[in-house]
Length: 98
Image (cartoon, rainbow, N blue to C red; front, side, top):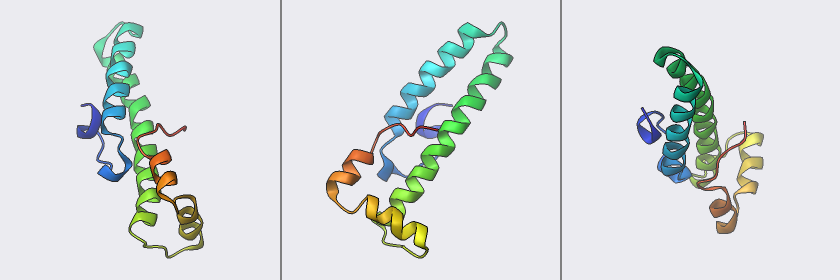
């Protein structure tokens, strides 16, 4: 599975196309690197699950601000990062480093 089908991240983080492209590249490289499809899929899954989880976490942080559900100190601090439209656009559809 690739892109949005593989990980359900809310649309406000805008990572569907970015993730699908990364997934396609990762599966191609894994198939080239490993002698069996099973090994390639295991490698691909490990890599892309970590990336998908980081997208979900990023979406949660961005969503906390966008929905103004700021309950904890950490959420209030995160909201400050996304206080302007420019900040939201800067953080949308960009790969998260993990």
